[in-house]
Image 1 (cartoon, rainbow, N blue to C red):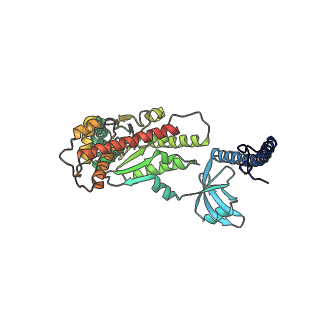
Image 2 (image 1 turned 90 degrees about the vertical axis):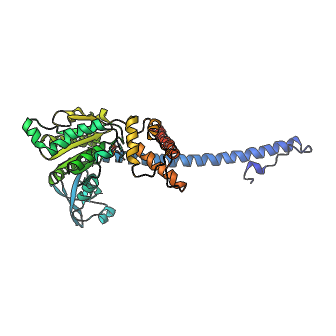
Image 3 (image 1 turned 45 degrees about the horizontal axis):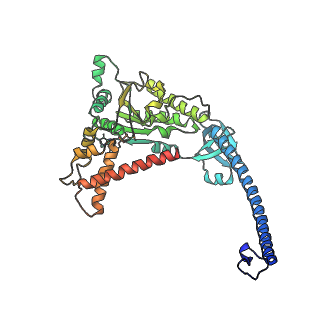
Length: 405
Ligand SMILES: Nc1ncnc2c1ncn2[C@@H]1O[C@H](COP(=O)(O)OP(=O)(O)OP(=O)(O)O)[C@@H](O)[C@H]1O
């Protein structure tokens, strides 16, 4: 049996071939094509059947995943591993229960491990140890090395931060004598990389306070009570290390405008925010703990956190103007071997729209250009090439994010 149509010779060119021979050849080609068509149709049917099977599996797993995500997860501690399963104690209500686990999960569990359990107390996943979570979520720096001199172009913001955060720590008696409460919380808002974290670190450095940073995004947990507990821990660590500056970055992650969505995840985030507000409400403004929060998304914040007694001092930290960029270039090139032809005022004009972090990146990249050519001096051309490269990279990132939006 010929396998493909190409195996069927067509005697078109052969003058001697009769009409009959040509017809027979065409008929043979037609048979081959029909055979192939049959084969393809069978393969297509098989593929469709396989596809339907996978589609059904995908729908089932998606449904299960959705159910798992929606059903609130609780934190529990493994008490004991028995022949029938695992004895767990749920946090909060201390309810003990014997629950089954897969053999694979069982091998991974030991007494005192933390696990996430769902409504029916089935173990969904093993959690990292509480101390590990705390270490990951909280960065404690007893003496941050950032000073006000390291920050360029934010004189006005710096003065506000010194007045609202540094002064109550350095001279609390001023507020007592005058009879006013210092601002309880300061909210720094502005684009990424503009110096918000630096301001918080600089004020902690100036007042010899412990700097405790927590990212709001780390507080967004699916496990009931985990976020609120971390907020309590945060203030406990601050009290243990007074004087302390608490810096909550990305506060929009837990303090966004309330939505009417009913998923347990959103309810949990709101519980975490309420815990933060409770800690702030219950906290003694005259104590030696100051709170600074930062956000790139001021527009998303729930007005509840901006009320008096909470983050009632708002400080915008915008991208630097040309004069600010020039200062930031000077700051970040202090220890660099810069050629005489480098003109920071010109570079400041060139880098319109750059944040402080962008300027820092340009300085680093300019140094790399010199190193690649085995030079020890960084020229104006290196800075210009570095700006070209970093701003192009930013444009590409922006296009990518749009492409995937
Ligand atoms: N005004 C500035 N002066 C000097 N350096 C700056 C300034 N702003 C940003 N930088 C540089 O960018 C880095 C990041 O700054 P920082 O972490 O303070 O930004 P941020 O506003 O907190 O950013 P994000 O909102 O993304 O957390 C700093 O370590 C510093 O090198």
